[in-house]
Structures are given as structure tokens and as C-alpha cells.
Amino acid sequence: MKTVFALTAAIAALSSTQASAAQFNFSFDTTSTLFGGPAQTVRGIFNTSDTAVQRDGQTALAITGISGMINDVAISGLFDAPGNPTYYYFTTGPTFLDGSGVRFNAGAASNIAFFHQDGVSADVYRINGNGTISAFGSASSSAVVAAAVPEAATWAMMIAGFGMTGAAMRTRRRNTRMTLA
Image (cartoon, rainbow, N blue to C red; front, side, top):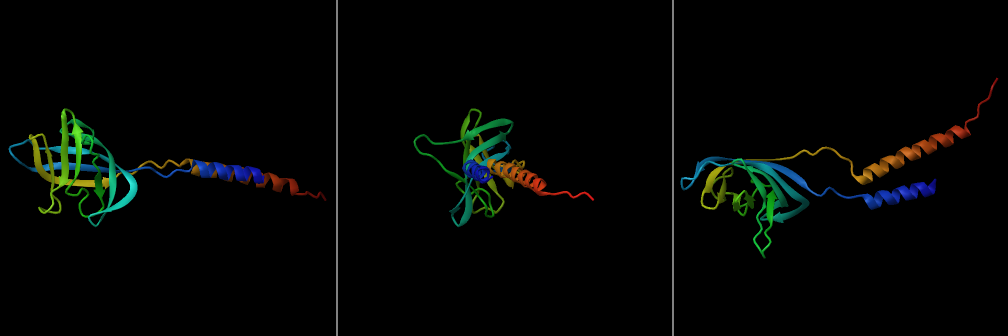
């Protein structure tokens, strides 16, 4: 019995992993365009690390991926300057993107910038890219609620618990004596 318990505990410890990312929905809608550009609509999901860092006095999570649509064109991933890795952050302060924002690729367009327009207003964001995309707008973000899927360590502990409960019931049954009158 002790061997089974020790083996189960070892499996649970070795197979435990932390959740690797958080996800946040985001949306952007044009309130005014610049340079005669078209209105912009952007919707998607940021994938972030689960390790918080401090950036400009705000708690932030590194953005590790992006998916979604910009004007019915699929966002194909984060923009990364060759030879110069770029890091983007999702902040937990009054704005979810700082002035550096996030840069991404979509269709034939690359290096599209989506950021908070610092110094204008608390709720004004901007999107720029390739000279044809330039607009101010409002944006919002919310956490994505993921389905509750137990991690491997949880499964191991649950199975071990069922096994120990069964063993205890079996042992208890053997020790019960019945006296007939």
C-alpha cells in the first residue's frame, strides 16, 4: 500500500505543469480616420505569458501570440523585426496596450501597429500600417474564460484518491465480523 501511494505521489509530482498562457479578447473600431484612410475594424485574441513583469509602473504580461481579423483579413501573427526580437506587453493598468503597443502581420500587410495613443485620452487607441491604415478609435479587452480541463497532476491525485478509498473500503470489509444470534 505504501509503495502504491509513493509511486502515485511521484507520478503526480513529475507530471504537474502550470498553465502556460492567458488569453484576452480585444476589439478596435474606428472613431476617426487619418490621411483619408478607410475605417478599421479589428477583433482578435492576445495570447500572453503567465509571468507578470513591471513595465512603466504597470503590471504587464508578455504577448506571445495574436490571432483575429482586421477588416475581414486574417491576422497572421506578431511582427518581429529580423535580427531584433521585439517584445510586446498587455498591461493591467488603465489601458491594455501601452504606447509601444503591438505590431502584427495580416494578409500582404506587415508591421501593422496597434497601440494606445498616449497623451490624447484614456480611451483612444490608434492603428497604423503601410500608409493606408491609419485611424483613431476606441478599443476594449476582456479575459477569455477557458474551459476547465484538469492538469495531469490533478488527474493523478484524483485517481490515487479513488484507489486509496477503494483500498480502505476493502480493508475495512475484511475486518468486519458478523455475529449471528
